[in-house]
Image (cartoon, rainbow, N blue to C red):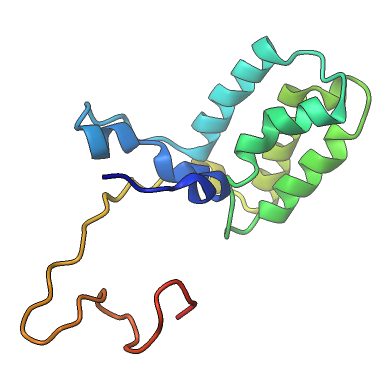
Amino acid sequence: QGVMIGRGAMNTPCMLWDVDHTIYGEEKPEPMTRRQLLEKYRLYLEDSHADGSSVGSTHLALKPTLGMFSDLRGNKAFRGTADAAMRKKNEEGAPARVLELAMEAVDAANPGILDEPLQGTVAFRPLAPKQNGTNGTPQGTPQGTPRGQKR
């Protein structure tokens, strides 16, 4: 059995920060914040992508971070600052520096968001088999809405 989560992980990468504990039963990690996660990634970028020689390579290096503030106040500041900085052809265009500037922008737009603990991963629980006349839809799902359509 498996599940495809590619688009979900790309749009909201924070959803998987503790997945090894939830799915595989590994030791529960210490609670993490967006600041800690981004700072670790920034240090990785300093080692791996120091030059920032092209907008394309900088964008690809930062792509995993672009959904970090999805549906949160400050997302526009984060993405806009990152976009503007990565277009510069100097030291400001290096991926680690772009990420640092974007983190400063989101911190100014929504103080404290970087330091809120990330939510834990919730394991998927399949629906119980149909019983007593229920149709097996999740609680709160409008009856008659076809699967896959907005509810």
